[in-house]
Length: 413
Image 1 (spheres, rainbow, N blue to C red):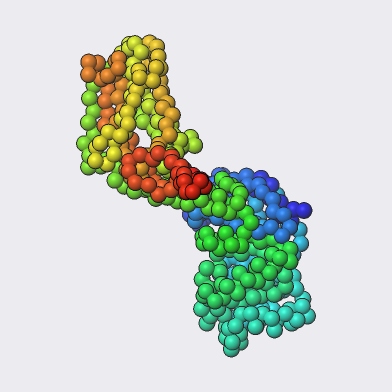
Image 2: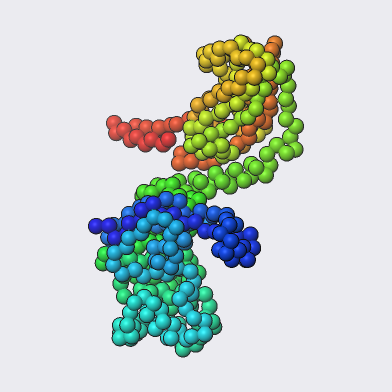
C-alpha cells in the first residue's frame, strides 16, 4: 500500500521587480512578474514503512517538496495524497513562539499537530525526558540555543508515533549524542511501520536510515533507487561541477590559441557532450561525443575532420580523423554547414586535457589546411568507480592468482 503519492507536482513562485509590483499587477491585471519554477512535474510513491532519503544541491527543491507534503505550502499544479498521521520537523524552530516558554510551546505545537490537551498532557513526561533541556523548559524559547530548540521540537514532534515522519536538515545542528537518540527513535518507528522522508547532506545518515533515495536537481527527479547507487551518482555530479568550475576559471585565459588555415572551411564550435549536455568534466572511462560544427566558405570535396587530445604538458595522448576512420563526407558547397560526431570512451587517467581540432584535405593537414584550432576544448577527467590506478590511460584489468591448484580470481574494472 502506498502511503504517499506525488503526481506531476509543480511549484512556481512569482518574482516581482519591486514590492509594489504585486499590487500593481493585481489592480491593473498586467503581467509584471517572472515565473521561478522550483519543482517541475515531480512524481513518486512511497510504500507504508518505506524510508526514503531526499538529496540534492541547495536550491534543488527539497524543502519546497517537504512543505507541500506537510500542507504548509500549496502546489501550483499536481496532486499529493498522504494517508495517516503526518509529523514533520522542517525549518529550525518552526511552530515555536520565541516569547513562550518551552512548555507553552509544547502545548501549541501539539495542538498544531491535531492533539487535544489531554493527549498532550499524557506525553509531556516523555517529551521532557527525551529532550533533556532541564529548567530551560520553563524559559522563553528565544533564550534557547539552536541545539536546544531542535531537542524540544523533535521530542514534541515524535512524542506519538506518526504514520509518516518528515525530517528536514534541522537535526544536523544537534549534538552527536542527541543525533544518536533521534536516529534510534526513527529506526524504532520504522520497525513499527512508520514511513520516513529524510532530507540530509550526510551520506552515512541516508545510507543507514533509508531503503531508497531520490535525487532532485533543478526541481526535477533525476535519479531514484538504492541509496548507494543514487549517492554515487550525486557525488559524481558534485565532482563534475567542481571540476567544471575550476576549468571555467582557468580556461585558456593566458594561453595563446594557435589558429591557422586558408578558411575554406571554418570550425564554428567544438562540444564535448555527455547526456546531451556540453561538459568540462568527465569520469574515467565515460562515453562522450566530441562534436565539431563547421561552415564552408568555399566549395570543398570530402573534407577531413580530426582531433588530437593532449595532456597538461602538451603530450599527444590520442588523435584520429575521419579519413583514417573511413568516413566519406561527400562534397560541400559554399555556405553549407555540417557537423561531425566522434563517439569516444575516455579511458584516460585523472587530470586535465585539451583538444586540438582541425579540418583539411586528404589524410593530413600539411598541403591543404582549411582550419586548425589549438585548445578548441579543455576538459578535466575525474575518478569514477574504477580501482585506483596510475598513468595517463585506464586499461580495464582483472587479476588471477594460482596457489596449490586453487585459482582465485578478482576482477577490477
